[in-house]
Image (cartoon, rainbow, N blue to C red; front, side, top):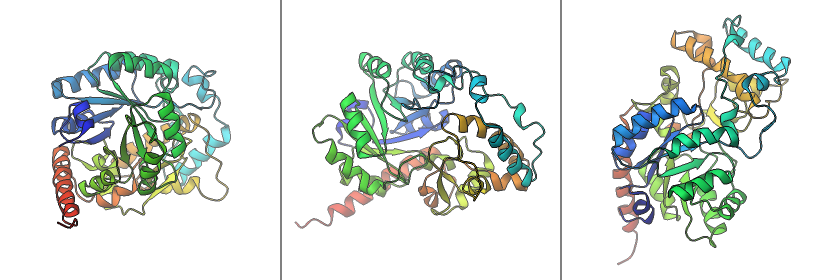
Length: 378
């Protein structure tokens, strides 16, 4: 494929796959795309294991790492340990979660026995993320991405020195301008259709809006994200001026995905209307499967979700218990089970191998470009 971005990164097809599953990352890279490992949940030790495994599988082919280092976060520098973060969660929020689980038939006697890794809080801060960055830059990554806010100066400086492209999630025109001014190389322009953290503007509107806003920065590449699960959607975005597509949700129903069987089953049966934007898991708006959990946090009288990372700490023990019981067939847990996914879930109707999804993208893209070319008068 003729593409400056493909040449820059050494890939055959500008399909970028964000996944927490190393198998998906490696499979996409080996199929000609660009896999990106979501590393926000990793300690330096576990990230070293994952990246070493990917290196063995891809044998020099390009891949990237995605971190989450917010610019604004509750007690960003004050609370150093996970225990200190946990201590700031109001008792009424804990009680609300416990009551919600009890109403759905779950035993909550050991709910708060679950302990997050002590690095949980530090990994979400620039200082703590530095240790993870040390690991990432010790491997032959081709791109480092910050998933929330302008990448910290330390990340930018290290990436430039290592010749690694810097990407940043972009949910609004204003974000794009700030990223451009900071020197970001690739903007992942994510519309509200996207799974996980997302804004309110659709991909179809946001991509051309951002491209217009950064006309003064011709060297910046734009990847379209949000609701993209087919090659024809990718072609449409590239017709608008994007250099490629950033995808996440479509990999959640692949055979290699880390998705729990219960949630995968719900996704395969879901329609595009079965997702909601909710602050109930992280404290910031994230698109996820609608469930009894998301419904409860938008119900009259529900407490306001806590700011990040407090809501993440609050929800994690509940989600771990819910997923475990759901796999055992517990009906109440199945009703509560949810996960981040975009509106493209309505297009994800069958479980496929990761490689077959990549090849379907390639074929569908080629067919779409041929159809579009056919509309031109000779």
